[in-house]
Amino acid sequence: MSATQLTARSRRLSPAERRQEIIEAAAALALEEGLAAVTYRGVAARLGCAPGLVHHYFDVVEALEAEAFTHAVTTDFEGTFEEAEELGDAVAGLRHILRVWVSESPEPHKTVWLDAWYLAARKPRVHAAVDHAMRTTHGLLVAVPTPWPGSCSRRWTASSSTPRSE
Image (cartoon, rainbow, N blue to C red):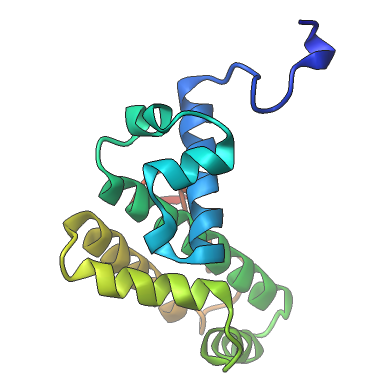
């Protein structure tokens, strides 16, 4: 098979790239169908691979659920805070954040939050991911009254449950 015939699915990925691909697929599945759909089989079907490959990177489904949640909300947080920063005014930015998060529209990230809160009661890894997301969000909101440039520079890594600074 020539290099031009390789598809994204059959391309050989490094372990870190493959793990990230699995997390992104799990997050997309969670946003579309809820965290209950994040199973080895569900993610594998989305990727077109065997469930064993997903299991190889995540020893328990709970770890995959926690990473899917973290990736989904991280992407949402970063987008919302970037939009707020672009407004250039802390009050307008805070209004934007609240309008997005508290709107009555049934946006997928809201369902993922509800699913995660429900699962957190009996799944410690999901509980830790939810707790971290809430603490990070609180930290970002506390930074809102300061001047925008650089005030929300704490970003998340999609593959871990801890924030990193840029």
